[in-house]
Length: 429
Image 1: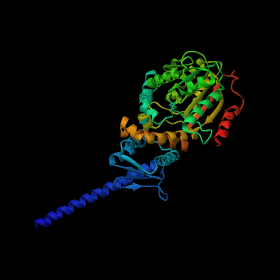
Image 2: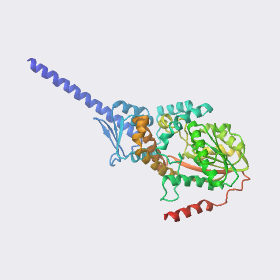
Image 3: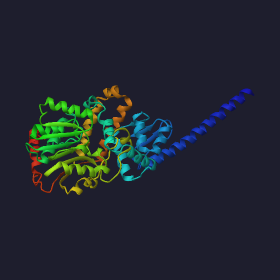
Image 4: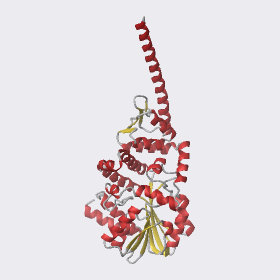
C-alpha cells in the first residue's frame, strides 16, 4: 500500500510537470509567433531552447535564431531591436547560419512591415534626449566610440585608419587602394587647386586632410573632438613632413573660425543631429569664401526614422542618418547650390564586408582587449551595417554644394572618371 501510494504521487507529479511544460510551450509558441509576425514574417526560424519554434510557412529558413531562455524571449517582446542586440552580444541568442544573410532577411521584412514597437519608440525618444549633441553631449558621444583605442581600430581598418565608405572604381582594388581612391574622388569632385585653403569638419585620424595637402597642394585645417584621433593625426602630419600645411584642432565644429575656399565633411553629419542642421549650415556659410564650395559625405535614409535603438545605445550614441530632404536644412537657408548628388550605398556594403573579414581575423585579439561580449557586439554592428546597405535601409550620400558665384566645378563628370579609366587599364579590370 505504501509503495503504491508513493508510485501514485510520482505519477501525479510527473503529470503536473508534463502539464506545466505543455502550457509553457504553448505560451512560448504564441510569443514566438507574435515576434515573428511583428518582424514582418522574415524567412528565418525562431526557436526557444528546448521548447517551441516558428518559421514562415512554405519557405526554407535562411537561418535559425535560437534563444537560450524565456527572459530573452520577453526582452524581444518589449524591444525587438535592443533586446536582440544585447542578447546576441551576451550569447543568449545564437544565429545558426550566415549572420549577414539572417540580418538581411530581418531587415527586408522590417522594411515591408512598417510596424513600430511603442516601448521601443519611447526608448528611442528618451535616448535621443539623453544623447543630444550639445557642445558637451557631442564630445561625450564621440568619446564613447572613437576613443575606444587606436590599437582596436588598427586591427581591422586600413593602415591610414579611414573609417568611412571606400570607393571601388575597379573590382580589382583592395580595401587600402579603395580608401585612397575615395579620398582622391572627393578631391576631384571639389576640383582642388594648389594654394587653396580647405576646412575639414570631422577630420578623424587625418587621412583625407593629409591626402589633400600631399597630392593637391592645399593647406588644411581639420576639426575633431576625439582626442585620440587628433593626437594620432598630428603625429602623422609631422611624420609626413606636412606640419606646415595641415593643422588638426581639437574642437567642436561650432567653434570653427576663418575663411576657406573649400570644405569637406566625411562621416561627421551622422553625429550632428537633425535639430542642429541649421547650425551646421550657419557655420558653413560663415566659413566659405564668396566662391567657395564643399562636399558632404554621410550615411542617409530614404525616409525619416531614428537610428536603431541598440546602435545608439551601444555603438553610436547620438547618431542620426538624415534623408536628402533633411540635409537641405543645411543648404537652403544660405542659398547654396546643389551641384551633384551621388549614392555610394553599394560601395559602403563592400567596404563593410572588408572590415568584417578583417575584424573576424582579429576577433581573438579584440576579445583579449575588451572581452567576448564586446567582440560579439561589434561583429553584430558590422554585420547589421552590411545588411542595411545591401537592402537599402541605409544609403550613402555624397553631396557637392557651392556658392552661386562658384565656377570651380566643371560642368560635366568627365574629370571624375579619367583617372579611374587609367586605373582600370593598369589593373586589367
